[in-house]
Length: 157
Ligand SMILES: Nc1ncnc2c1ncn2[C@@H]1O[C@H](COP(=O)(O)OP(=O)(O)O)[C@@H](O)[C@H]1O
Ligand SMILES: [Mg+2]
Image (cartoon, rainbow, N blue to C red; front, side, top):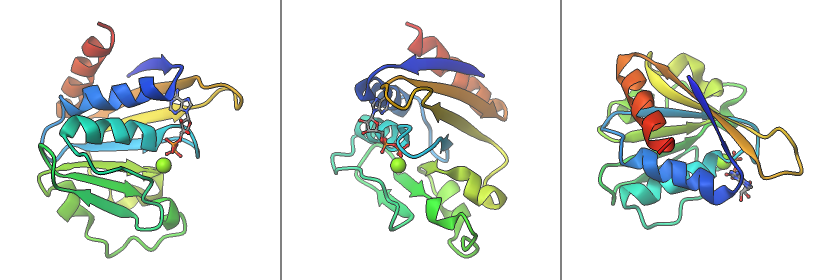
């Protein structure tokens, strides 16, 4: 586990950009944090880093947005609307094992469907008025532990 602070939206986007150069097919990244924490902002950087030029917006009303024009597919999910259930037949594994990178905002709402291993990034805003965000990276499984170590090295350069 490690923590890093950003003080602008661009810095959070840049972390996504770096992450894009390190992810491999079937990677699953959970983004947890309150509304406005920066989950979509980080995803924008990730998409850009994968070579996706289309505008990435919060997919709240569609749950899953797929982007196929980059180095590998991006499956961007915002499962906020599944807070009270309803995710039973969305075919999660076809995304998680579909050869792309899955990014899931509000992943706690589909806990039952998540794979056993993943990278989790928790985004926190300490002061409602400020732009500072604290990002905490946690890895589940050896593959993601390795990824986390590499990210840590790269972000501290
Ligand atoms: N350090 C920061 N990191 C990320 N976003 C920031 C930061 N400072 C300010 N912001 C702003 O906060 C908002 C984050 O929104 P968004 O990424 O959509 O959050 P979420 O998807 O978590 O609801 C954006 O308007 C962004 O410009
Ligand atoms: Mg969002």
